[in-house]
Image (tube, rainbow, N blue to C red):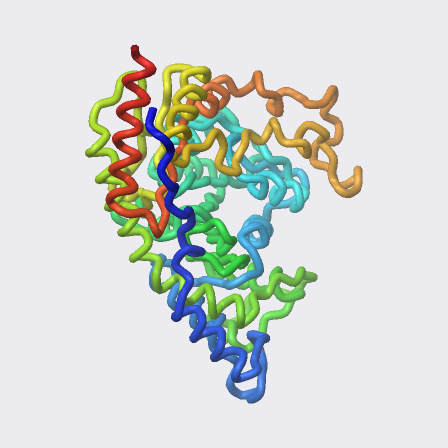
Length: 411
């Protein structure tokens, strides 16, 4: 094979940071108003978080949006706002980010792991298999920019009276059947963590169409309070209760707002390059692309393909790496049952564990052998990222290298 060429820089929102973010951050600093609810003029609260919430609500077609400190905080708040708590169960795809599991545990509920399908999103048929009288909600993860198959998921969930929470951390701007992800379920979360399509280093959003969920989310994020800003959006209806503190700062919102305004440009760039790569690669021996519930709605920043076996995937990655192509075995996500906190079954205090009484541990439903399909799929894939700074020439090289590597594997 030829000597490796230089690899294009990775990154989505982080690679697009520029003058827009700088201008909004400087505006916050020059005003000296870093806290969202009050600043120099008590009658006029600082505008950044409120503007971000308003523009995100319009962009994602959801009436109520709340800025918080992280995507993880958004998950915990959305679950608690939906009334998930001790004794409840939440169905979670076994292949998902850490927070999808830990957020459920921190509400006192039990995460029930479910198989993914070849899209690497929740298999809709798992809801009927995993639901029990204790099931309260379904957490749907739109994995790496691609929609889960929402229509059968929503049908299966709502006919059982279950909440559907969409995890759009990696899929802001992606769609399902023409509608933005996050506008389908009962609540949704977005993330501004560094690796996300839109970033502020950290930060998150809770979105919902439900007035009660919105008020409860506000109280959960602000020590149980419901301040005048939110009363103007919708009057308080809930009795006050003890909440946590996950308020977004004006500085975070300044960066996040600039990034939200760039989101469509980043998405359209990735979509165009993805289409070019797949077209240039053509038909490949022993390799198939990840099937998607809505290919047209995919964000397009990371392509997944399957080799015929785990060994074949390893060899393919080695060949691509030798050609200077970014290709990963894992992308920060692992099957939950391989994580240390699942293997131990521990929480900060034993009395808080939703796994009390399950023995021996790991119990059935928390072991690799309980998820043969997830194990098979996640050992056979090859992940090919596309970044904001990737060019036509970069993806042409990826396509040529992929053709070469799959042809060599056949020989």
